[in-house]
Length: 341
Image (cartoon, rainbow, N blue to C red; front, side):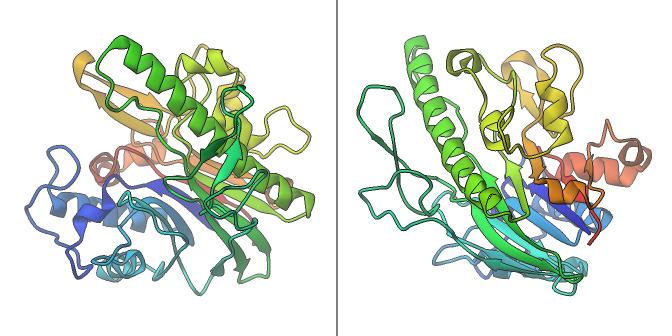
């Protein structure tokens, strides 16, 4: 069984109001890349991965004019992919949904949102992901109310071989200080956004702990927009959201070898899953942002991870067509896990 997580930059921009692929010379959401170029690059990447299921981060929009499932199934049909079905959970208003594209002959996923309904007043602990979490973010004895801009997708999955497990797809909010005009604004907004992201990580970890306490095999995958040593705020708050979600040094940690390697060192080489152009510095920044974290049951099934990095993975580098497609398709690269069904 092979499962992937893949953040596709502005996937929604490739579809018209009828959820059909533009596949034309118009510009995509990617810099200097046409819609046809991005579409065809994605087709090559998905075909090469040949995954049984792909957790798509930044999936096409779900709204009055667009349908996430319809768009993804149209994409799969266009390229003849065996991942011909799709499922999503709670929609959001960012035009970047979380959805699973999967092969219905290999597994059956069902949206299974856990947690208590919170209502607008919020709840403590780990309420349902479309609700409101009450938590004190700044130790002032006043509870703040936190929401997910992109509610995680919680699925119950049964494979063809009968393996039953829970899957949570997540995309935690970026910490970028949007709207900042001064250095003081950058610091203030950066700290506030960092607090919100860590609150989301705590919320997500709460659901993880509930599943693990029940003895349920669990896979958490997606873009956490964070990693050990990624920014200066980590020193202020003590740990990254990755460490929180992973349960690093806790009694019930999840396993991700790429995250573990990064956490074990602060200087030196580490895995990366994304590549961004930094205009002021005129260079690319690479970062580890995408993860597949699993409970021990997957290790018992001989789990193996792979980052489909066009420059770092030897097989990707050796295939010029795939290598170029990975660069054109998105600013993130897929991560896969394989295990015995």
